[in-house]
Length: 321
Image (cartoon, rainbow, N blue to C red):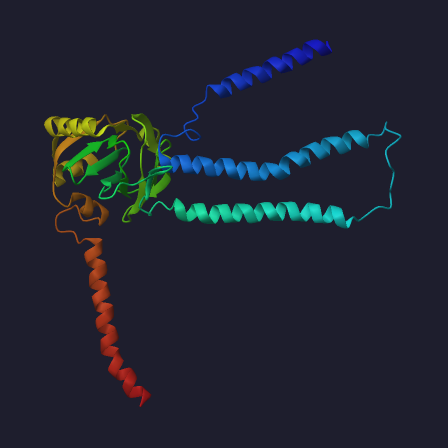
């Protein structure tokens, strides 16, 4: 019976490993340099922590075996309560690992800052001189993604494309609910918030079709907030842009207001012409005619505050005298 039980457990373990082998490991084997550096950070952090975890597990099992009740040869020392050498090992090893993790985190936090422009395409390959990043303006909507390409003058719903080995600069905002923009093969996730703009710099190093989605729950249609990110050669990207321009519609403010209505599982849709300043109006919440943009309102308040400071300055000087 014990042999059958052992075989049963072994088969379950083998099945578990087989299932894990079929999992998508894109996070640990990505196709973008930023995501690859993040994966490397995960590996190093795990290795550093295992330096303590593995010896603790091994010593726990060793102590349990050595000092079992049936082992009469084990040393019995009921009055033992302190060892300076043991205390040094117990405290020094974790302290050294924490220092190493802290240094690793400090360096990588600055190197992988999403707002920091890229200085390399991949390991050992710096960004070529004169190469400008592709600008993509991202709007998280209910429940779809809208991507603006200001240089190309186009916009696309639920599809994103970029040339291989060219830096990409994402400018990200949202219409209402906070979302999280995430393409695991490209880079880590970053939040999209209404009335605010976050940024993400990244690069894709291999051509292919990659999954993108929202990593932050945002309501009933959250599960449909998925899109494909297409990594292409420069020539294929130009063909894709030409296809969008030939097959797309006009994205006016009126068309945008219709698109803004909450909807689920939206198909890919192309816009060959975009009304100038539309992304800026979405960001500053002034798409509706006659509404005041947030940046203008804030500038107006700033001028009023400056004027108030100037008007109060003489009276304060008079009081001082």
